[in-house]
Image 1: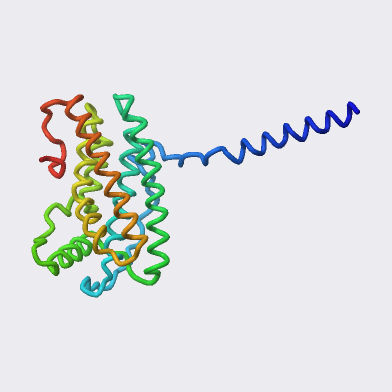
Image 2 (image 1 turned 180 degrees about the vertical axis):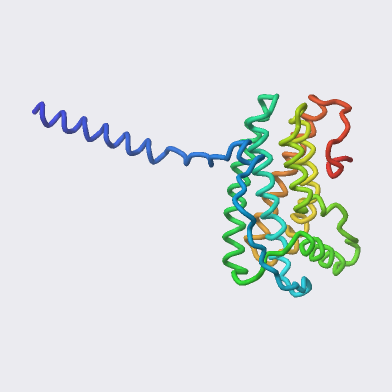
Length: 240
C-alpha cells in the first residue's frame, strides 16, 4: 500500500512539473551587447555584388513596404540594445526590452512574408524604396509627395546608431530623438500600407506597427519633456 501511495504521489508531482513547464513563456530574445553593436568585428573586405538596375515602377507595392520596414526593425533593435545598457533612467530599460522583443517578432514575420511572396526579387535600396513610395503616392490624387522618408535611409540609420554609441552625455536623449526620427518616416510607409497593401498579412503588420509606434512616440515625447525640457533636438528628423 505504501509503495502504491508513493507511486501516485510521484506521478502527480511529475505531472505538475510538466504542466508548469508547458505554461512557461518562451525566453525573450537575447540582444547583443552594446559593445558588439557599436564595435562590430571586421574580418576582411566583403565582396560587393553589382546589382542590376531596378525599374521600381514594376515592383509590387507590398514588396516596397516590406523592404522599407525590414531595415527599420533592424535599426530599432540595435538602438534599443545599446540604450538598455547605457540608459540613465530605469524606466527606459523596460521600454528597450519591449522594442527588442517587438522588432524581433516583426522582423521574423516580415522576412517570412518576403520569402514567401517575393522569393526571386532583389532587395530594394533605400533610394528605390523612397522612389517607389513617392510614385505610389503620386498615383493617388491629393496625397502629394513623401517628405521625410530619408528618416529610414541606411545613411540615417548608421548616423543614428553612431550618435548613440558615441554619446558621452544624455544617451537617453539621443536615443529618444533617433527613434522618433525613424518613426516619423515609418508612419508614412505604414499609413499607406494600412489602406493600400494587397496582401492581408502585409496590411495587418503595417497597422500593428503603426499603432505600436504611435504609442511609443507618445511615451518617448513624455519622457523627453520630463527628463530634458527645452533640450535642442539631436536628430533633425525628430523635430517638430
